[in-house]
Image (cartoon, rainbow, N blue to C red; front, side):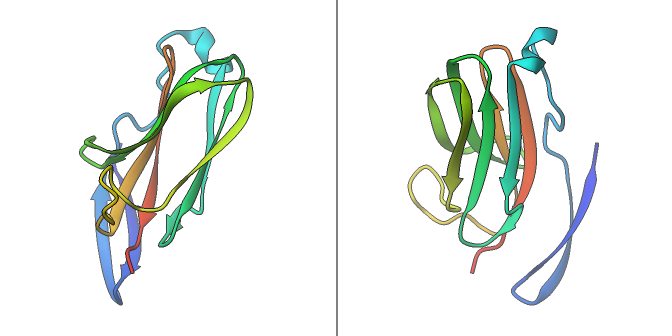
Length: 126
């Protein structure tokens, strides 16, 4: 599925067409839909940082990563055992080496042993 986003960067109106694979919740087992949920990214369009919130209904290893629209991993925010409950993690627009990434569309992704979901966000570098 392709989505069109308009965003302003450096006073230039840019039209970006992209897709993030997979775009929707992709459970490996039907029952896993009830055990995990990627809740949100706030704000979705940001320049300093964004907070990614998720819920774990059964304790297990959770990986939250940032990818570009081609699916290449930019940064792994967490890859650890998560207790049952609500969690949040912040991304400041940097890659795995601490360098600021370019303005553009990125995906935040949550993976467990049985569940994977990805959503889109827009980073505007200043």
